[in-house]
Picture 1 (cartoon, rainbow over the protein chains, first blue to last red):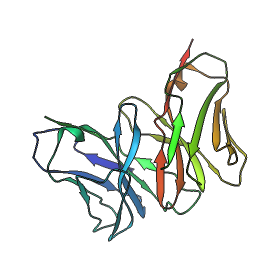
Picture 2: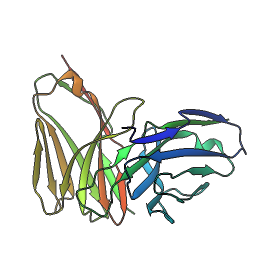
Picture 3: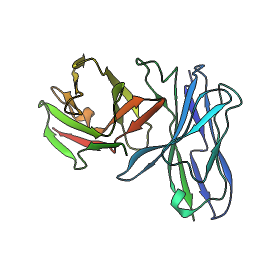
Picture 4: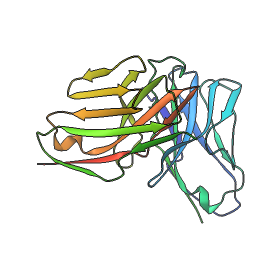
Length: 115
Length: 110
C-alpha cells in the first residue's frame, strides 16, 4: 500500500550539477504531476502527464525536464541546478484529472538545496 | 493570468469554535475546487471536492461552499480541535491541471 513514493527525501547539489528526482506510484493512475513549494508561494505546477508517453508544461517548467515511459514512473530532471531551484518538490498522481471526482495523492516530498 | 488568493495570515481560534477559511480566484473558470490539508514536512492530503454546479458539500465536521459568481469558496471546520491545526490549501481543477493557492495556516488553541 505504498501510494506515491519519492526519492530521495533530501538532496544537496552544487550549482551546475544535474540530478533526477524519482517518483513512482502503484495505483495505476493515468495522471501524474510535479510541483515545487516555496514559502509564501504555495504549490506551483512544473510539469504534468496525462498518460504514458504524454507530458506537458505547467506554470514553472524552465530548468526541468520530464518523461513518462511507463504508467508507474514520472522522473523530474534538473538539467543544471541553480540556487533558485532550492525548494521542496512534490509528486502527485490521480486516476484521471479529467474526471471531476478525482483527488490527487501526494508523495512525501524531496527537499532540495542548491549551493 | 490565473490567481488564487488565500488569507496569508494565520487563523487563530479557540477549541470548539468554527474555523472559516476563504479561497478567492480570478481569471479562471474551474470545473471543480478541492481543499487539502498539509502538516509540516508532509505532502498535502485531500479533504473535499466540490463541482462547479454544486453550492455546498459536507463531510463530518467539514463544510465547503462554492460560489462561481463571486469566484469564492469557503471552508468551514465546526467544533474545531487542536488536532485540526495545519495549513489548508485550496486548489482549482480543470483543463488537465490542478492549481493551488498558497494556503492558510490554522491554529486551534485549547
